[in-house]
Image 1 (tube, rainbow, N blue to C red):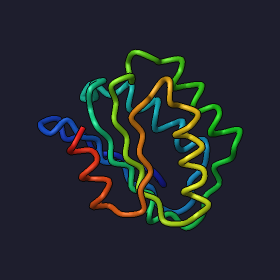
Image 2 (cartoon, rainbow, N blue to C red; image 1 turned 30 degrees about the vertical axis):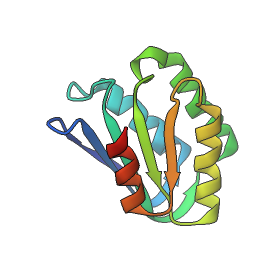
Image 3 (cartoon, rainbow, N blue to C red; image 1 turned 60 degrees about the horizontal axis):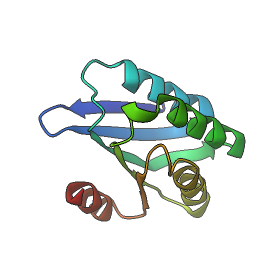
Image 4 (cartoon, rainbow, N blue to C red; image 1 turned 90 degrees about the vertical axis):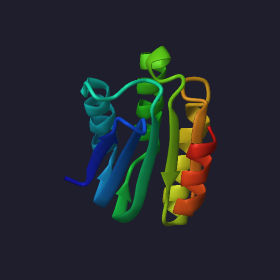
Length: 125
């Protein structure tokens, strides 16, 4: 599976890792799995590490769907903090597009190139 997660309930942290080819369906599937996971709670923080992907097949249409999903679940994710660690410019661009489109539903999204910076940002919030 190109995207997986672990939940550290004691720390209130979701650790997501993406590998291989990352698609719109992978990310939308992850969102659905997280919301259905009984260990997940709205106030958690997520560190999404996509540095190990080989290819990005996330589209602008898919990013809009992701933003629409987040708007639909609204209050359940309003206090959620998400740090996305990206490897390359095209991934950075898509992550920033997501960040901008979800500002009203998920106001705490950060896009980083450095893992330590992402971890510090999550810890500060």
